[in-house]
Length: 253
Image 1 (cartoon, rainbow, N blue to C red):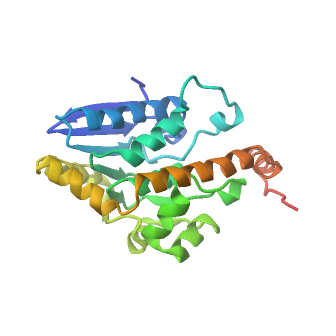
Image 2 (image 1 turned 120 degrees about the horizontal axis):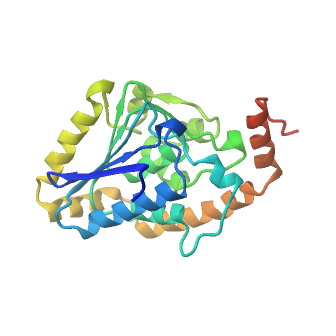
Image 3 (image 1 turned 90 degrees about the vertical axis):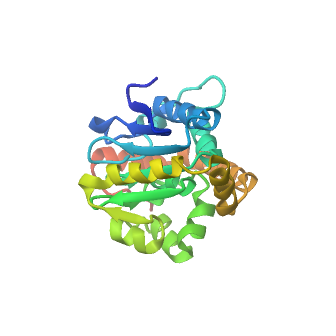
């Protein structure tokens, strides 16, 4: 178990709290693996009927840890990020997310695989892939337009627009906004309510509501993955990272 993920079970709700606030809860290989383990567990343990995901500190997650991009290592077996994406996209247990602050990159795209997304007032949402020479991932190029429509999706993915909590609510990306100090409490109440309902009815309803098949999602992830890997090796990404560390605007001329 990672110290960067706090895990508890109460009233049939599996609570997962990302706990890396000193690094704005950036997700690294260890966290991806721990999250995948717990999401897989939620489908195997009959005593778990709902999952609540949130984070400690003032940020939900700043996205993928840059160190993983800059210092890649070969993992034995399936890479942890791929395990996580597969687990969250195929999870049959309802996932409720309490977005307690900025949700950037995969912090936004993972939400498209969750069933209820609630946000605190200080939350904002950004997918700055084109700003760092990358492309959408986690099947977001398929799921985001379905969730919010093409114009909102293009504003987020191409222009890199940042949505505040109220704008995210208006777009359909999230379904409720709470005051920051009650966000997790209110989200937990809903998770416990769902956990008390007929479990097969809930799982079958989730499956029907999803609308997009697992096969479509996995196929889109693979397509995105090919282009994402190409961009990671590109001059555009290298220039973006150099500009970030040198605190200057990138030059793509």
